[in-house]
Amino acid sequence: MTTSAELGLPAITVAPGGVATTTLTVRNDLDIVEAYSLEVVGDCAAWTTVEPARISLFPGTSETVTVRLAPPRSSAARAGEFPLGIRVLPAERPELVTVPEAAVTVTPFHELQAALAPRRRRGWLRGRYRASVRNLGNTPGTVVLTPGQAGEDLRFRVTPERLRLEPGESAELRLQARTRKLIWFGKPAAWPFEATVGPQDAPGGKGPDGKGPDGKEAAGAAGTTGSGTDGTSGTAPADPLTAVQRPRLDGEFIQLPILPKWLLALLAALLALLLAWFALVRPAVRSSAKQAAEQAVAQQSATPTPAATPGAPAPGAPTASPGGSPGGQSKPGAGQSSPGTGGRNSGPGGLAVPGTGQQSSATIDVQSANASSAVGSYQVPHGKVFDITDLVVANFQGDQGLITITAGNQVITTIALETFRNQDYHWVTPIQVTEDQAVTASVTCESPGTPASGKQASTCHELLNISGALSDIRQGN
Image 1 (cartoon, one colour):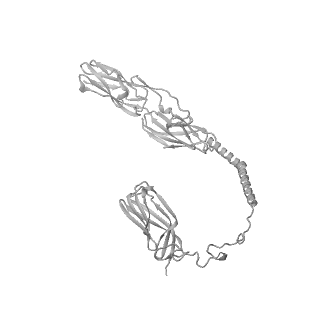
Image 2 (spheres, rainbow, N blue to C red):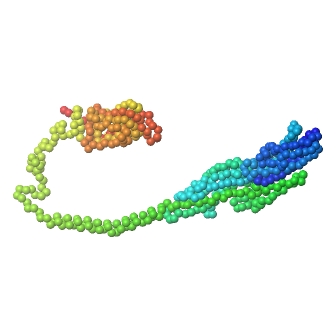
Image 3 (cartoon, one colour):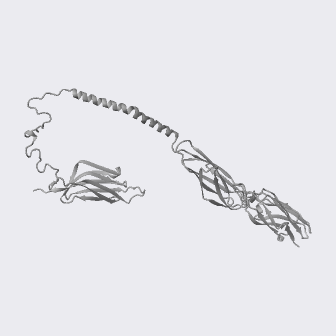
């Protein structure tokens, strides 16, 4: 003696959002009155009910109950084949529990939710948009975004070209709309467009022209009815794949002119002022200047010439310099400097030979570690004298510390490094550095700076460029 239970349909097909029913027959083959609890087990338990859920049977009798399957139209009811089990549990003899099973097929459906942000963009040449897409269907699929425009004024680019979305998953597509040419003058132009979002190669889905993949009109939604062996029937909506919905997104790109109206008005005003200057003001200025010059010449011509005094030299005759001989010629040696005073003093070793000076420059490179000092120098060659006229100091890293510049035994300057990046000096009277003497740059590094690369340097680094004339020395007798 036992308990038997049997489902009316071994295989059931149901569409999300629809309802399918079958029956469950329970027979009591025991010799006692038994109460049975009916419970749905398996992947279909969330949306399957048994009515009633508890029955009582006399020995040798049976009863049929209704099993109702109603999967929701959402991504929670995944498409595919799932087992359905009804556990029939006796109250008095629980060891005689039985679980009849059936196969349930949930049909797939496609449903997409899409939005375009922002809807309107402004720019000179292109606008960028974001299209968010969510798969509300119960089966994974590949989604494509197809933009279009009535004319050929815009070109589009979609990145990525396609998306793979699982049920309930969302993602973004980037859309760029670009015009074919710029607008230099005039008013802004509005370019509306639309983009459709739909599954790629969806069977039975409508294309952009509203037809199916075979060129025929897509089939309408029609109900399907199936009957079981026990006379029960189940009704499900039409296959959703025969009418795939493609959300349409409306967007607009406002193309702005390169030169606005106010700039054109300003250019026109400037051009008018320029024409007025050449046509009216400039001739008047030139006429006034000419009249002033003519008046000055007339006044000079009217001024009487002073009479010549006896013994006075005639106009234009050469005059004698004070202490000079007649005829304006000076005595030999007059006005000439004595040796050692006529030229620049080059110090021990003699005078600079006139006409031998040549432009020369030298660069002193000084690198010093943090919290230390370093000295760089340039020594004047033997038999030469260096007349310094220009000096440039470069602190290109922005170091912190001190730099002292000396020429021979003379200290030229001491500068705090953090106060400058480039510093230059120029002298009308050159600074002379004689043979075998040196120009030195002494750097005390307190903190290395940060160059243009953005990474702090490990050492201080300064450059000193000196320029001037390098001349030969005339040795004394």
